[in-house]
Image (cartoon, rainbow, N blue to C red; front, side, top):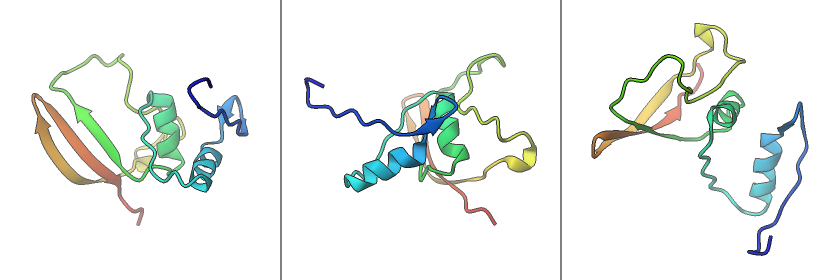
Amino acid sequence: LEAGAEVVKVGGSDSRVDLLQVLEDLAAREINDVLIEAGPTLAGSFIEQNLVDELVIYQAPHIMGSETLGMFHTPMWAELSDRRNLEITDMRRLGNDMRITARLADES
């Protein structure tokens, strides 16, 4: 707060913030670009609620164990038919890593 930050309280339920209300508040302030660097729960919530325009995914050349933390936690998606397709818009190598830019494909 001393640095000039403003704290805004928004509603929610089940101890979760209403993400749409957050984005609507930001839009009312003419903040139209929001970068979300989050853990799997918050990232999964944005994906499940279809509140993401673009994903930028960095993939390192590692194979990790099956018990490691996933990229998205999406408990509402229980079946293979719940999956969302991606439209890859850019792929580039950055050192040993890959940077993948994608949009959620339109549901048809």
